[in-house]
Amino acid sequence: MNEPLLRVDALSHRFANAGTRWAVRDAALSLYPGEVVAIVGESGSGKSTLLNCIAGRIAPLEGQVLYRTADGRKVDVHGLPERERRELARTEWGFVEQHAADGLRLNVSAGANVSERLMALGQRHHGQLHASACEWMERVELDPARVDDSPRAFSGGMRQRLQIARNLVTRPRLVLMDEPTSGLDVSVQARLLDLVRVLVARMHLCALVVTHDLGVARLLAHRTLVMQQGRIVEQGLTDRVLDDPQHPYTQLLVSSVVMP
Ligand SMILES: Nc1ncnc2c1ncn2[C@@H]1O[C@H](COP(=O)(O)OP(=O)(O)OP(=O)(O)O)[C@@H](O)[C@H]1O
Image (tube, rainbow, N blue to C red; front, side, top):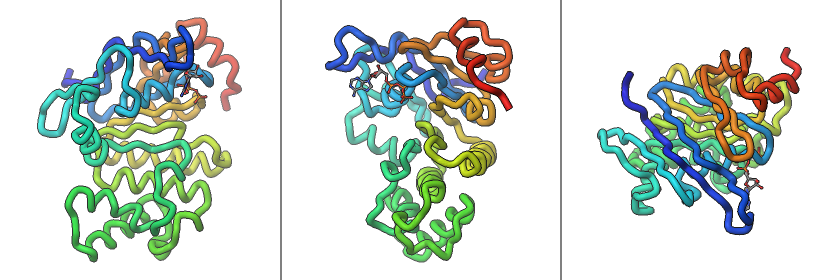
């Protein structure tokens, strides 16, 4: 098998104000190129903490996050100087926030939100930046005629599409998503999920998706990890985990969802 793009080893984190309770305990996982992996579990099981540790936003108390860069180096994400970690986040990674407002700049136009990351990579040609922004708006099914509008004038679903365009325009190698569709109407969710599924497959992206919705895991993820009280209690191919769960907690999680 080819080498993983990302490897997490024995990662644990406990918040300073949380006493002896571990938010994440001894997590281990690997992500391979082109693979979509879901992290599922009930509220408070540690999904977002694990994702934020992987993204370099929270320094774990124990363990390592190893990433293979585009130029073939294996880096320890938390051992990198802050400047290099930010550079990775801007160039090789994307992060789709649960609330689009956290991942967008609401005071600049939709087009500027998309082209900003290209500018960070050194692109300066105004015409090309504008053309890329319009092309990406079309790809996420937003009307490019609204390229100069503020994201404030967009609906929740439209903002989330814009956030996705902003993240994918630089063709990242790894995309981290925290509950990308929660909080939206069911019909908006379904369309957005379909869009994400198509884009991820076309671009051969590697993605890690946190969700409490097993339907999202079913639709998007090749593999699924199940978290309970900070620990990964089960992992495997998504269909296997959801159709033939082995761990009692996964069995409970699956049986408490009314499958369509
Ligand atoms: N900033 C914080 N300070 C203290 N405790 C925290 C903090 N953030 C999270 N926690 C705790 O860490 C544990 C894991 O929380 P986390 O947000 O990672 O879970 P989650 O599975 O993502 O939940 P949700 O689906 O509700 O977002 C919980 O017990 C939570 O209360």
